[in-house]
Length: 527
Image (tube, rainbow, N blue to C red):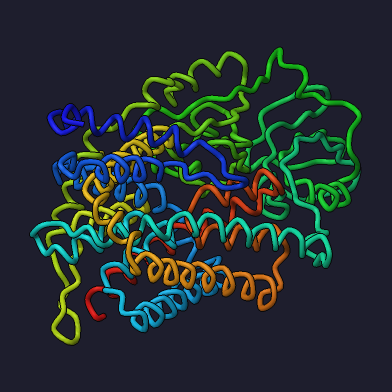
């Protein structure tokens, strides 16, 4: 053990490597994922408390991880509040109710608030909340171990109970399917429509009416790129990208599906996926890109991560987006150079935006907010970077400075610095965990953790399924999004596969993450 005491970098990467290996082990439907690094650190420090890593490791891991979460959440944060307020209200009710219930049970059992708040963070699998609680309690001094102990006790039950809740929702959906369960999930399709009815509309009017993108018009045997101002005429063949549930209405309006597919002929008008790696266009809308006027080209779809999006004019571009561009064959190389289309550039860490953004976040973290009753809300290296990350992620760019990171870079930083934080926290808390589990405190924390997890699952299931009458897919998305943990979400996607799970999960996640951070801090301030 002395080798770990004498070599902190060895300790750090041993905890990460061994922890990730442990996190990959499945216990039935449950695996611990990145939290394995926490348990590896706890196990190592339980054997020898002197292996504790320097607190700077936890601070660096926490601030970068929180900033990455904020940046990724920023673009959907405002949209979630505006468009998904009903499931958000259910999720907010759940995290407030679980906080109240766990506090009552904990207080009745005589558990200290530091343990309760840590258990709340673990039951919500909200790692930034754990860091925020530790900093709120430390007040610039030594970081206490109690919150990490509560977190470690509650975390496994959070994953297990949420997965059991997902299983219940899927079983109920099979026994008592709602209209939403039976509804068709639209997908994006490309079709050629023959205009055989009299029409008097432009391409832009057609696109607005049916939420479609027209990429080509074939008229009198000649195929051209479709421009918004172009008129749609009887006899035209138009190539459209549209959600399949809108296709029938579009065809009924215009004529019939064509047996000919002019877009298969790529001799003059061609199409290609082009990656956005030119920073000049990151954070701008497709309309601002103005490929129509500049290159006589149109964009029909945008591939972001693993999702295809219909290319609407107000869609804000992100680094690494892959645009399905239709243009003259000899123009496509110019468009490729214009947008960048560089995998290397798209994977750049954007050191300027990253450094300035984290500086602003950490400066904001130095502030504290006076609260009624004489307490102070400390933003610290968790809440400060998280809030600033959300703001800068929503902005996308400020003048020449691009705040957003490519999704692959963000995911890599998110995972790495989360592992560093969890390993550092674990190495400083193992002895305390052993003491807790070997006393009545262990059973008390177990009761508090179960209270948190059961209330959270119950409120979400009742609110989503009964009150909002959501189907299985959106109920799963709401429950897993409110929980935050990727394991129940992955389980739901594996068993169900409906993309509506992912949509609602992504909408709810950022708001609830911030909510849990604030609630956890308020616990230790007022209770």
